[in-house]
Amino acid sequence: MRVLWAVLVELWCFAGGCVKPAVKPKEVTVTDEERFFSRITDTLKTSPVTTPTRVPFTTTHQHTRRHDYRVCVGVAYIFSSPLKSFDNVSAREWYGTPLEIVGISDEWTQVKTDQGKGWIQNSHYAPSLMVLPQFKQHEMYDAAHLLTAKVRVCLHDLFGLQQSNWVLTSEEYVMYCCWLRNIRIEWGDVIGRHAGSWQTHLKGIINVHISVNPSTSAIMEYTLGGAGYLAYVHAVLPDNTLHLSGVGLLQSGRYSEVSLEESDWRELRPVFIKGV
Image (cartoon, rainbow, N blue to C red; front, side):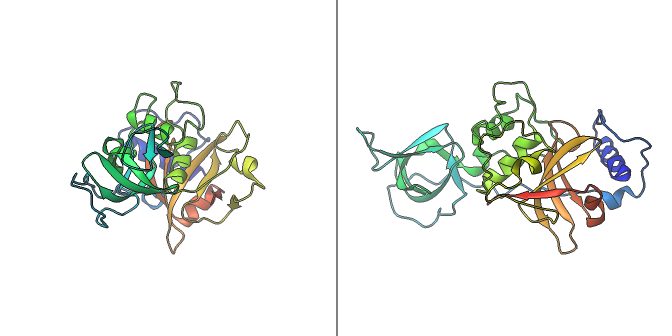
C-alpha cells in the first residue's frame, strides 16, 4: 500500500503537478516506479465526426451510427412531423441523448431514439465530439470548466453541485462513464454518496453487482490513507492488468488515465461495482 501511494505521488510530480495529496501514509518509500504505473494514451478519444450535409430530405444509411450525433441543447423537442404546430411534440430528449439519423432536410432531421422516430430541428443536435466532454490527461476540471458543466448537465446534476464552487468529483465522473454507456445504477433516496461508501449503500440493490473480481465497465472503489476513491474500469487484460480512468485519483478535480498490474491493484483491496 505504501509503495503504491508513493508511486502515485512520484508520477504526479513528474507530470508537472505542484501540490502533493494532503493525506498520505507514513514511512513512504519508492521502488520500481515503472512497474506500478503507466499512462494510457487517449483512452476516451474517438475519431472526429463531421456534421452531415443539409440536403433535400432522403432516407439514408450513411449516418446511422447511433453515437455519432447527440442532442446539444438542454431539452430538444421531437416532433411527429417536421412542423411546429399544436400538440405535435411526440417526445422530449435531454442534452447528450444519442440520435440515429434517418434522413435530413434543410431545417429538420428525422431521427430515431429509444422513444421512437420523430423530427428534430437541425440546430438542436451536433456531432458527439462537440457535445460530450473530451477529457485530457492531468487536466484540472474546476467548477468553471466547460466540461464540468457538461458532465453535470448529462447527469441532470445528480449530486446537486451545479450551483456550487466544487471541482468535478470522482463520484460525478464514474457516474458519467456509466451514463455514457447506458449503464444504470438506481440510487433511490440514498444521500451522502461519498467515495468509499458506495459498496455499503448499494449492497442488495437490484441490478447492481458487487464483486472483488474486476470486469470491464465496472466502478472500482477503494480506500487509501483513510480516504475513499473511485475509478472507472475501461478494460481488463488477460493478465488482469486494469486500464482505469478517474478524477481525483491524484488531486481533487484532476483527471488521470492509468494502468495497474494485478499485484498492484490487489494491494488496494478494491471492490468492483457494476450496474446494468
